[in-house]
Image (cartoon, rainbow, N blue to C red; front, side, top):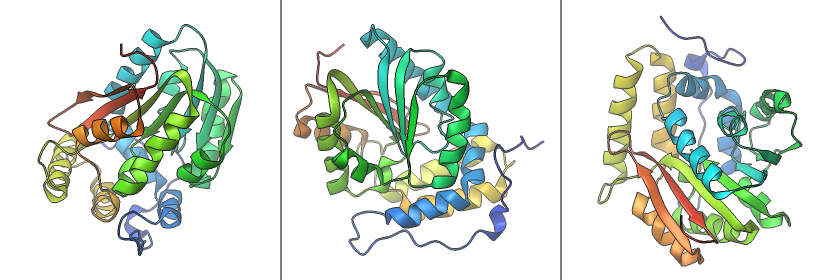
Amino acid sequence: MRLPSLGPAINCLSLPKTEFLSKEADCVDAKGLGKFFDSAWNAYRDLLVFDLMHHRDLFGILVGQVQRRFQHPVSFLDLACGDSDPARMVLGKVPVREYVGVDLAAGPLELARANLQPFGIPAEFFAQDFLEFLGETKREFDLILISYSIHHLGTFKKKEVFRLAKEKLSPQGIFVIIDGMRLAGQGRDAWLVQCFQYMEKRSEGKIPATFQVVKKHMGEADFPEEGVGYEAMGREAGFKESRLIHHDPASTFGVYLAGNGRDL
């Protein structure tokens, strides 16, 4: 039996064709990507319902890190936040004094407002490219999270995210990436095949239409680094702490953490 999707119903079989690759050939066109997630958010929600990308385990690791490092309510910047549903796993377990969500897809941001309302914390949402937001904001944050999205950028722009995140962190703040990451020595094509096989097996064939949408999107728009590559980027950006704290070799999803303070 198929589990119910959350949010407005969308016919995944009739989605419009979307071109993602920019002329730079180093990254994905941000506006095209935002339109895709606006139109296909229901397909993405299926991934969360079936936990195909290990949101529960990986966000659990994030919660543990925040609990260990902070003795005060944190300011939380959630880049590419979508509908902020995964963030609720953090907000329900650690004290947060303010939440800022940034995403190009305006539709999911409206869902995010409703999702966070029960927590009663100050929350702001910006329908904007997260790299532009990082470059423009003058605020500091204790926790900067980017989950399942930095893989849409080319290597140069990924490094720019690291540089800007370091500038916008509080003195003891942490920058966290939750995402698919290539294994050491693994090429992009091999990574895609491994992800497709893993997700198809884990979903047990219950969401074939969603799987085709996701497979097409990943083939066009996902360009992850090796997990150890993020460690190198963090060191290059000047973080005192830069480490891959979890990387599942079966699913390839992992958690990377960088910080300006001491290594815990």
